[in-house]
Image 1 (cartoon, rainbow, N blue to C red):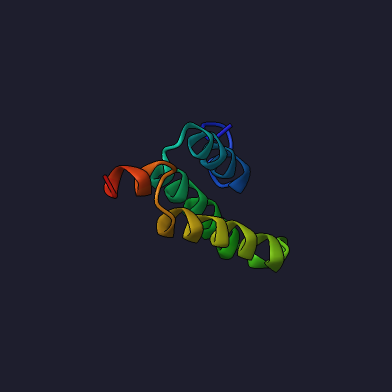
Image 2 (cartoon, one colour):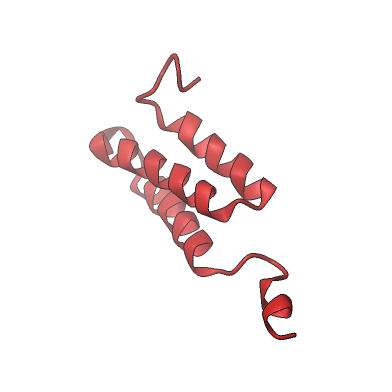
Length: 75
């Protein structure tokens, strides 16, 4: 998808979802931010709430420690 349509946000959003599901929060946030950047470049084509939703997801991934992190740090 990205190879054929590199200027469409869906590919980056889906990669963000894949990396998030795998627990790679840093990469997931990176791909979500790429999706947001593409959408903001053509903001008239996208619902602002969708842009904000994806941006919020990226922010959450940046701020929340991975699961199990707190327990490992408190030992």
